[in-house]
Length: 163
Image 1 (cartoon, helix red, strand yellow):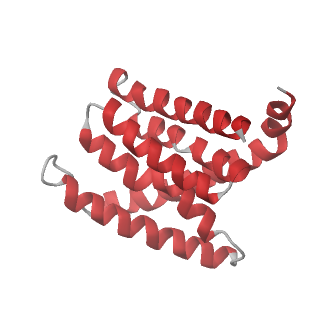
Image 2 (image 1 turned 30 degrees about the vertical axis):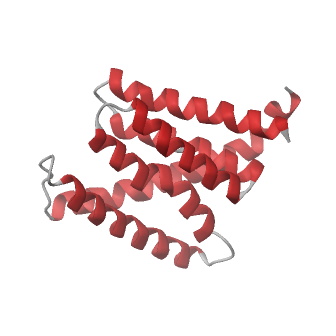
């Protein structure tokens, strides 16, 4: 049990270190948020959904303390941070078409919520081009996320277990 708690703690530390980089590196913020979202998938695979939810809550609290740009924090917790849990739930015994439909519905609902929260603080241009870019970017993000999960299961998991 203590080994699992330590493993989750190490992954949470990695998550927060990546999010801390957002304060230092002003470019590639979406890439860093996407990268920070990956440890939750490891927690869910290794420790289960309940631990994944606890990890997300810990990440939400700690990232609020370390991220200086609260608009980025809102974007992270409602999209990238939450997506690992949503992805796991959606991908439980559904057809690939239903999975993508549900993922796109989730992404579009969340981005509308994020837009209405953040439009009070930052200008966000919305037109057909930005919507199309978002849709494509989300599909690419999901593909990369899935590729990471496969890579972890095929390669990293074996190496980490040896340690």
